[in-house]
Length: 131
Image (cartoon, rainbow, N blue to C red; front, side, top):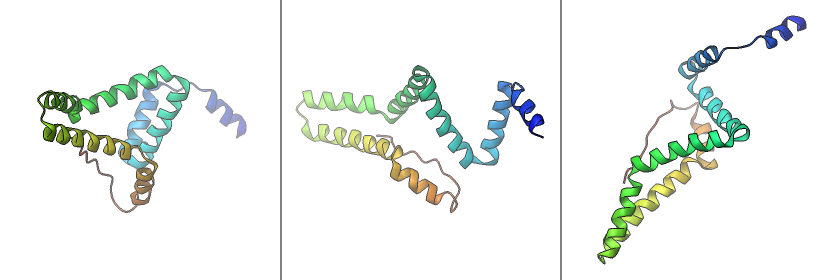
């Protein structure tokens, strides 16, 4: 039995077979899939920091753009140059709200809440970042 196990571990596994297994896991057990993705990203950060920075930086950049953060900053600068402090305050409040939402999304508090709710309800994907 141990000899059979060691031969099984020596066999090369194709990337396509791994991808198929991951896709099946995502369909059959989304929670386990999510945990695998987090572990995989942590491993990527340890093994290839440049690849991790490229991947996460790209996701972060797209989220910033989708949330309208750059537009909000430009509007705040324009309002500031026009002396419209009420508009500056409004735009800065929107930016601050987005930053707080982003901080919460990556917080230990949220992770613990997700773990507690995992068995009570199906996962949802609500994004409320737009400014």
